[in-house]
Amino acid sequence: MKLLIVDDHAVVREGLAAMLRHAEGISAILQADGGAPGIAIASEHPDLAMIILDLAMPGMAGTEAIAACGAARPDVPIIVLSASESPADVQAALDAGALGYVPKSASPKTLLLALNLVLQGEMYLPPLLLGSSSVRRPKGVQALTDRQTDVLVMLARGSSNKAIANALRLSDKTVKAHVTAIFKALNVSNRTEAAHAARQAGLL
Image 1 (cartoon, rainbow, N blue to C red):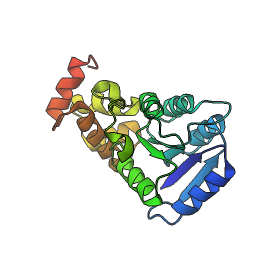
Image 2: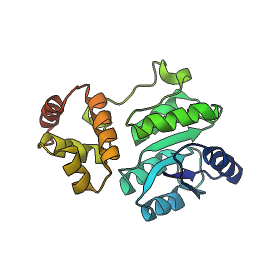
Image 3: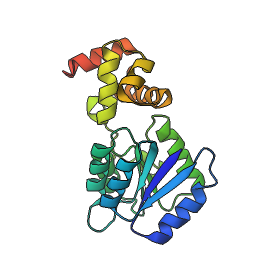
């Protein structure tokens, strides 16, 4: 599994990379010192599994970088790793397309938990902010990434996971994670209900 760390502080990048190298399943860790180079690197690596991105970076704001990375690589989930624990910043990151938000004060164990959850199609929010009334999880079709919307449309048309994987050039595991995330976002339990939600949203 290949990860990309986007942070303008070299010490933070190196420290995070050193910690993640000991995690099971991680084969390569790429680094970028800002949003623009991060997007370029993400575009050059089709096997990239995840982007870990800081919010406070010069040149390109964190939320702008999230949206731009999501547009360039809609199939790659993004986790924000930020010094900020402000509910407003968490909400801005989620609204921009991040699937996880981890404060830099969190333990390595917490970060690894967040990585695993997001890779499985879940969303991660820190316990400190999870119950905040000012932080809301996106719901419905609006909560889906562009790639998840593509998966939903094919799913609603009756395509199997394998057919979706072949058509969108994704792995079976990635498609399964997307389907799980779609079910959770739409609050449905099967493909028939998901297809109904897609039709109601005008996607078909």
